Amino acid sequence: MTLTPPEHEHNALVETAAMWLADQANPPRPIIPALRSRFNLSALEATEAAAMSDRFRICRKAFG
Image 1 (tube, helix red, strand yellow):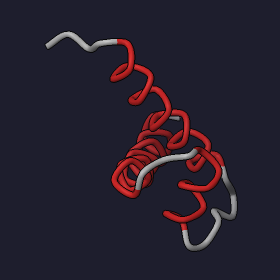
Image 2 (tube, one colour; image 1 turned 45 degrees about the horizontal axis):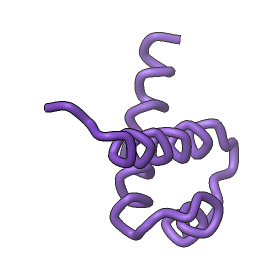
Image 3 (cartoon, helix red, strand yellow; image 1 turned 135 degrees about the vertical axis):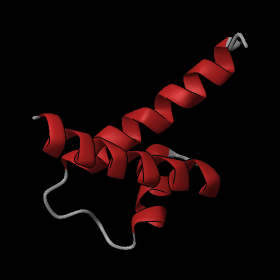
């Protein structure tokens, strides 16, 4: 599957939001509205970013 530019940008924005969230010592609450507002994401994209940030945190703890 080849990503077209808009799809690639979309995924990059979700990943950027996930990395930002993973870096927060005290993540904003509620998370989804905060991600939607800060990164102009849809509810689905914000949910994907939140889940991705959890995976980033787990990998950082496991692999440094």
